[in-house]
Length: 193
Image (cartoon, rainbow, N blue to C red; front, side, top):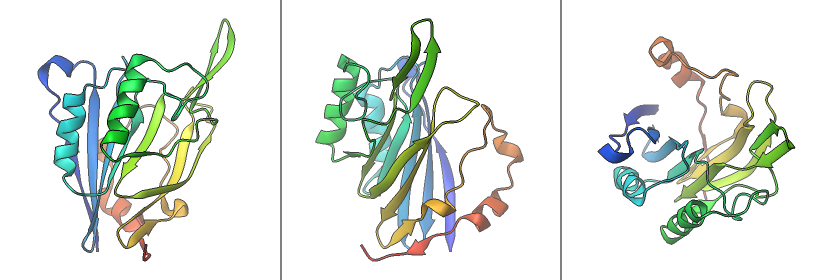
């Protein structure tokens, strides 16, 4: 039996305008995976926000992903590392997260007056679970590429084929979603790690 619940994070007051965060807790039998997606348009991910999210994830396997708009050689070989990228990378590594990105594969390509600029502002990190098969696909509807990967945690694995890729649009109507139908489409396969 598989269930999920959505958590909307209460971002501390001084950062509310700069950070969007949402988590989904997926539970299958006795295994739980905590998935957090962050959008940080200014590229400054305060440790206080990361600590709050980590405490909510507790000891569960945790995927921490998102458009963080920071650059580090750990995930981006296209743009020089900045202070925010260095700080985020150090935080993730010191707290047991692994970076799943292939730094040679861009997650974004933007056409500018200087030409096509490639970068990887989107970060996929994990703690207590294993991310494999990380790759991207170009989409016609965004300057960001779609990111695909497999996740293994506990005795479970989420095969790439069963992952539902996001629709190619920029907005979602969460209240109109058929969550029961979505839950029936989720396929979890047992695997001994």
